[in-house]
Length: 507
Image 1: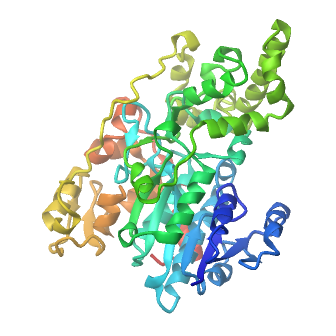
Image 2 (image 1 turned 90 degrees about the horizontal axis):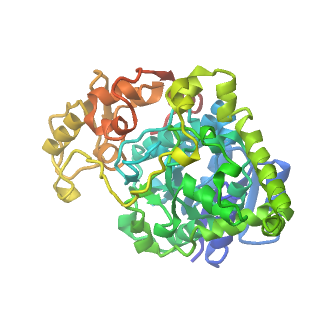
């Protein structure tokens, strides 16, 4: 039996290996939407003679183009979108493409003769968690959603998640993709690299492992898999702090002293994203997709360095050539750190907003010690699990209105509804946050996905104020921020409401 699959982003870093995996199954007929740029057209041309690939040119921002892909599809794989670093330069475009296309997807699926028959797989991201530096470096689905300040890629993903969960569809799944080990990642040369913190944790996964996962989901996902949010991670062999990542990469070039090529003051102190997953094994147990460790990426990195990568170990044999190698690498990194979105550009330009977001203050940046005194975290196996505010030992089918009320109280608010069918996680209830905003949301969105008030979420990053009245959220904010820290509030310049007004809301 032929299975018709609509795949977006088929020419991207994650989409290419997914398409290659799907083509291993003769039952799959894959329709791909191609953004008609020279590079995307060149990649798509590889499949023009394959009768099981139907490619057409289009734009994710155009409903008719999206609907053409969705029509008649058994499975919709929404992988495409704008990612960082491009997303950091184009907030409006990022929100339009990423969130706007999701609204179009939902509308197109709901326009099908039997919308509940269509399986919708949405690739979200670890960015939904925001920064989870030690000691709160272990996380799981249901932890507070906390997009990093000024991260519009993250905003586009969490807005999309909310719309999908509340869409009324049943056969959806949200996969929060972690840092992707790929050629494209190795080629990133942008100042945003140094927005990452040296003690930042991240559980990576290879592009080919993720692709195997997607193929196996399309082949044989059990019924209980759908209607949930999962974290995609590579497991223990893919967990590294950013410091450990740099150390491992540079050691393969024969450089064991990071001070020769990097300065501690280049790295932000907070506001990136990353977490070690407590629940990423769940997908592995269902689909057995993992095969790669971090060595997969290090091999790619050395290869992408070209002649320098091949010559590095030879250069390390002699003092003068080793000095030349370290100087080359130091200057490469320094160029990035002083580029448009580099941390030292912010310091040099006295960009107070970016300095406050990434370092707390200029004084905190000044106080960052050199390598010999930098406090590198080591207790990575210590788990501080976030409390979700309800009895998680109870089966979902037994959750009641009283559970919802206690959940709301732990978030500093109230559940306003007077009735709820026991175990009903999809029917929206009425809620009120600590600031008096009232909203409707399903228990699934709040308990399972980590969301709360959309009004607080969509208009500004006001995390210091939220943490003071919301004990649930305070768990992922207070450990990383001083009590007397200035209550900065940062406006969201392109809101989900802006995109809904342009594209139409169908959640």
